[in-house]
Length: 71
Image (cartoon, rainbow, N blue to C red; front, side):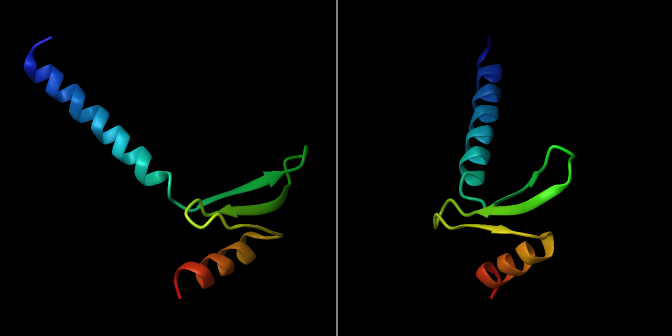
């Protein structure tokens, strides 16, 4: 491997590392489904504050996010 290829590989790994580090602090949102595939609840978790919440609808979850993070 020449120096150019090594530098390209290092740059690629650094980009993956910084993306991973940045996403580790992002608000995480997902839904849970029953065995029929129907959404049973929406969940949110903030790894920075440790707060988590469960909602009956996507709209409720969006309102919570708006109140907590955008006001």
